Length: 208
Image (cartoon, rainbow, N blue to C red; front, side, top):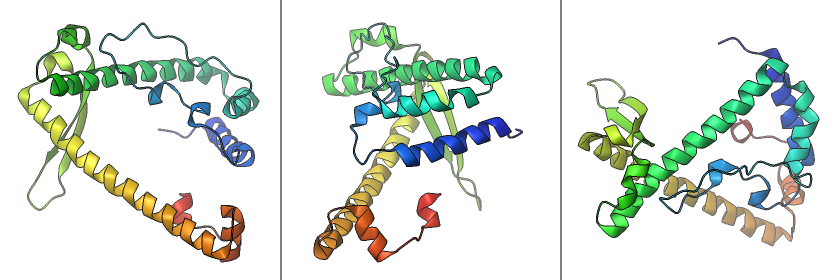
């Protein structure tokens, strides 16, 4: 796929503004979108528009500044793609929520019919001799899932859960290491402490 120079310019400008405007602290809800929503009920109400612009939101301010850089031909497609992706994300969460509910209740629940067309992310790992495992990822409509699909889903989710725990635990250990060293140095702000430790240096592995 050819690189769109206009979108490349847009992304670079967004990166610059994010670094420049990002507050020292802000609540997660400042930038939460539908992707972060939790679906707690099988009977999900009709979607409402949660993306109304809040002028006090710092991200909305940046979006407003760079809006003119978005090529006109891309505007409607990008916005429509965002909404489509949000709705598909909601559908996937509904299907996952059904599986959790079945586990908690120990039985198939009445709400299954309203969720049967929603997708489940199924990942299959096939070992091949002398080769790396072949990974196949697809969305399968709940109505069409087989016992193998359900087992593949469970296997991959357990693998990811273990990996997520490990990654989160490493991040926690890293945070505690920094806190200990800042305390010893008497520092109350990360930037001040880091500049003393590694002035004007950038770890390319972290920045990537």
